[in-house]
Image (tube, rainbow, N blue to C red; front, side, top):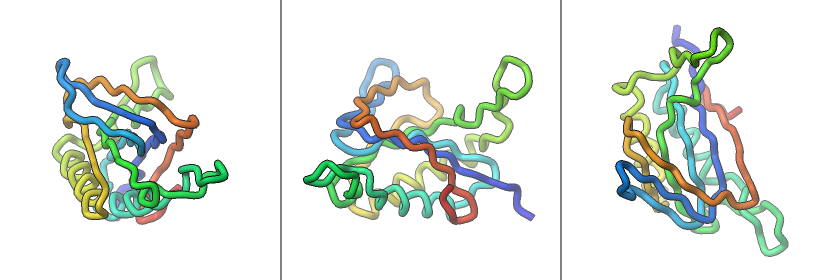
Length: 157
């Protein structure tokens, strides 16, 4: 029986976003979505595929009347994908977060690559951070619109 998994994504609608590593900009986008992505032990490509499909089609961009009625694909937005294992910080005990539910780098890195590839396969422009690096993420949250999403066994929560 597979361990319960729940890939986590913090999604922010942005006017712009960029990632720097050691002072160098390694990725930047204009209008679109900045995704902080946490992969847990037990996550499979099915969670990634569900997440990409859901995120690309979420109606969270304003239409001509200012209503959140358009998707990332419909507005031709861009995507920034940043791996973030700290989304699994468990602070129920003690004062130092535990990250035991986060996937190992060997498991998580291919999942992040799969996510980037899936967004690109949908024709979206994608920028990304550097897996495992100390990154500086800058963004301008538009709205503000921020959603916390979980994906497990092919379903979004």
